Every structure is written in C-alpha cells, then in structure tokens.
Length: 92
Image 1: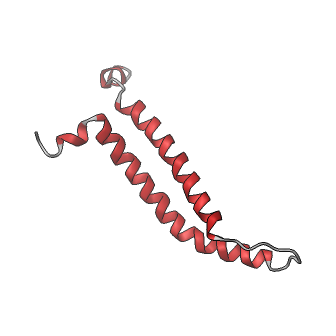
Image 2: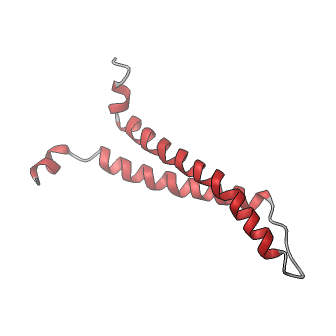
C-alpha cells in the first residue's frame, strides 16, 4: 500500500482536517490565555469581594472549545469526504 494512500481514506481526511484545526485552537489558546488572565485580574481587582481566576477556568475553556471544534470539524469533514464527486461535478 502506498504510504500516502492512507490519507485518501475517510478517517485519514477527517484526521488531517481535525488535527489542523486543533493545532490552530491550541495556538490561539496559548496567545489568549495570558491576555485573558491579565484582563480578568485587572478587572476583578476593583471589587471588594473578588474571586481568584484559577487554572480550572482556563482548562474548562480549552476543553469545551476543543470539544466543539472537534465535533464540528469531524461532522463537516465526514459530510465532504462521503459526498459523491460526480454529483458536484454534474452541477458545474
């Protein structure tokens, strides 16, 4: 079997697309987490009764974001990978 042939299968296509989006979300989180933490600390500093912004908030945020992104990308990639190319070519 050709080493690149495994990417032509449906799981390979879905995996490539989902992996790329997960990397982008990870990069965005690395950039946004410190900015969000600093902004929240500055905003909450003015309150008398304040709460600490802990790592749990950020873990929940990245976890739920990755879940939503993964489910969305997988559903769209499956729909595109399972579509018959003859039908889309016939429409053009």
